[in-house]
Image (cartoon, rainbow, N blue to C red; front, side, top):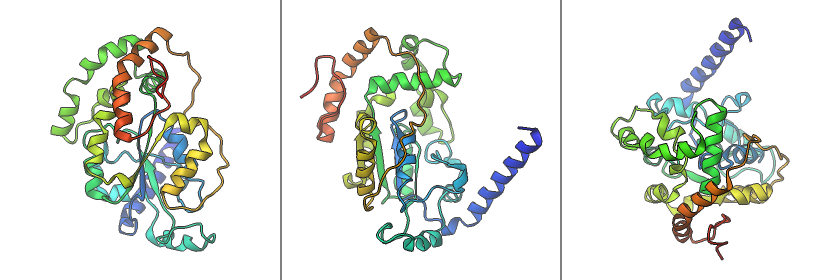
Amino acid sequence: MSDLNRRARTAAKGALRGYGMLTAGLRPGPDFVIVGAKRGGTTSLYNYVLEHPAIRPLFPSRQRIKGIHFFDTGFERGQRWYRSHFPVRPGRRAGRGRRPGACPPGGPLAGEASPYYLFHPLAAGRLAAAHPDVKIIMLLRDPVERAYSHYKERVRNGGEWLSFAEAIAAEPERLRGEAERIVSEPGYRSVAHEDHSYLAQGRYLDMLPRWFGLFGREQFFIGASEDFYADPPGLVSQVWAFLGLPPAALASRRRYNYHEAPDLDPGLRSLLRGQFEEHNRALEDLLGRRLPWPSETGARP
């Protein structure tokens, strides 16, 4: 792409976002937010959820925006900027007649998917203050497989230079004081906290109480990534029902953000599974359900 074309596209995007901000008062914000977990299938889930005729994409739709990352790293942009990404309210009302029974009483729904929200120490509180009635969707993945997938993504994007074993060993020092600094300096963006938190982002018990303390449990849909991978239509249908939508057919089977890569060393996998054994049992107790994750001491009943 030439510099001229690139500048033209940047200007066009800026103009569209400016229009969105000018009309922010007509844009009610999210009906639902997919908050994580990172590398848990959230990109595929969001794109599949959009196939329902009662759900509209973010604005502008041709850019195929998934995550706005407002409540984690973009909060200083302000609420008008955030709302500029959502469909205008009249458009939602107009969509009610497209297909009988397709839309809920309030018209078409809209939402976003920013998987760093789950882990970010301020995101839950910011979201609760701005949209206390929003529905929250989580996909929790086996912490060991999630960590390795996260690591491979960082390597692929040039953001990690250590081996996986070295990165795991370096993680405590990399993250030392970062969450506290994010809280004390709200405009601070921590690359280490977001990108090098391989094991930390799988310790869901460190995050879920914060979310459960701010929203009613009926506002949450919490699924296992492994169930989603095994049966995408089944889990997407559950999400649509959670959003109060009638059944629909899922046509897509594309795996978004999937990349072939070498498998994790079996010895390291076994070691990490042992480290997460107690955590995963306690997580199951908190959620009141069994999770389809392998156990180092054998499959949990």
